[in-house]
Image 1 (cartoon, one colour):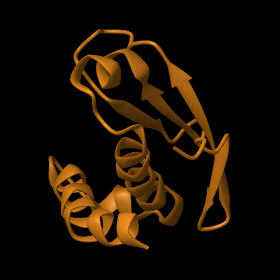
Image 2 (cartoon, one colour):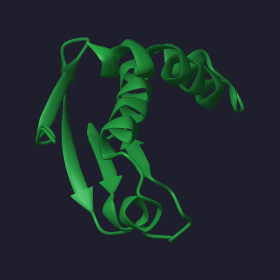
Image 3 (cartoon, helix red, strand yellow):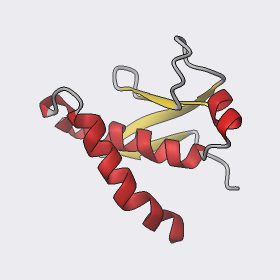
Length: 99
C-alpha cells in the first residue's frame, strides 16, 4: 500500500495529516478534522481493530477539510455536514480507488 501523505492541500490550504493511536474520548472515531489547526487526524487503533482502510478515512476527512477550506461548512447546520461528506464519500471513493 502507498504511504499516506504527511499533508494535503485543499482549496489552497495546507492540512497536516497526523496518525494517532486513539481519540481522546475513545468514542470509537476513525478520524477527525480540526479546522482551527488545519489538521486531519487518523486513529490507527480502531482501524487495526476493524481492519478498516486508513485511505478511505483520509478521503472522508479530506471532504470535511474541503468544506472547511471553502467556508461551506459554515452554512451546514446540524448533521448536514456529515450527510454531505458521506454522500461525497459514497459517490466518489469507489471511483477514485479504481483510477
